[in-house]
Image 1 (cartoon, rainbow, N blue to C red):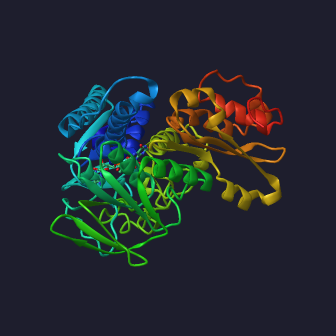
Image 2 (tube, rainbow, N blue to C red):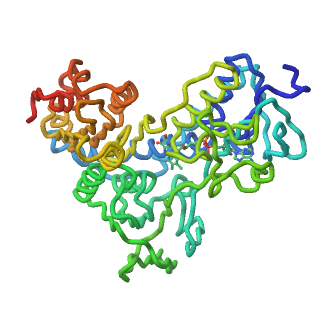
Image 3 (spheres, helix red, strand yellow):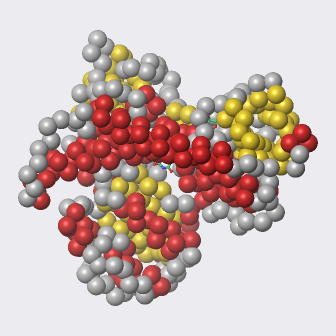
Length: 460
Ligand code: FAD
């Protein structure tokens, strides 16, 4: 369509959700404008998934050097050169950023508009005074690091994940407030890079959104790695001191460290963007949608982290593709959010899809749920890698598998099969029919299904 008459789709925000929507919409011959105030690619690429995973990988390399003797290899860890780690991390981000920019430049159906956008009508976004109109508006403004009352983020001693990714020098010791995904990932990476880490979590366990057995397994591994954690302990006060920070937790204990990383979740970036003024239904800052990701205002959609649910980049990609196809008239099937796999990239990794045991018991009733835990101690490849963990299946008796949970080094790479099992509503006997490769960690998934189907091989 003629841009002067308005675009087919105007997308506010170019993070995982927004840019995926733009690319898919352009494939469907829709004219697209995407508005970005910062960098194309958003949180995941610049300050989220990618740099944190690079940091974790650098830590894994350090651990390999530390543990080399266990494998009969003579190597010695003589130090961590943080400038070198940052160069590697920033290099990965820069390369992927360049690739993304190249893709958008080559795509003539997409117009990138730099500036801060504000919704001013059901078909209009104001970008620094310029009115951009579209038949459809897609809100994709993402999320920000939340803080709590009593916490003064100063960017040096009390920091968020954005600051944490820019440190020239790692602290000797750190307290991480929050034992959710972001908190435990930094704890894992920093410990591997030589930082003395303590996690403080208000809820009774680490990664509280995961299955209770996964939390237990991660906690056991962290204890073994010397990562301290205090669970069930809301913080009470934080003070900066001459050398760092002092944090008092419930019960009166005071912890001291060089710095405090605040990782208490991500809030939706929706304030002051005109959403309420345009009458969009919101809940605590999140944008409410129907199953087609449409808001209550006709023509306006919302995708990614601003929509209630798990805040993950691949969910954003999925939302973006879905909405582009919905606008393009392809009538896509609504997304089952429980079927989106979740991975926490700690050492060991925690991965899951579908329901955890508690939720399954709530939904189907105690008697209708069957679970099976396959310990990686029985898996050949896990012994070779010297990793510990498990594969846990949650199934409905005489019915499909409704949850797959895994803990172990790199088990995040295995949850893709769990995703198929869950989304295709496979029965344990269906999966037991498939022959899994030996020796791989993936085999553990096969073994667990064999056992649940009543014919265990290397298990009982
Ligand atoms: P964002 O990526 O936040 O993008 C929103 C964009 O909108 C931004 O570019 C912003 O500048 C722009 N914007 C906002 N307001 C305006 C405005 N008014 N005008 C113009 N532009 C605007 N997810 C995973 O799946 N795997 C991981 O390993 C992972 N690791 C993470 C690690 C960390 C430390 C963090 C913080 C997040 C991590 N995530 C991970 C989550 C992931 O980054 C988010 O789920 C994802 O980025 C959400 O995409 P989005 O498009 O909704 O929002």
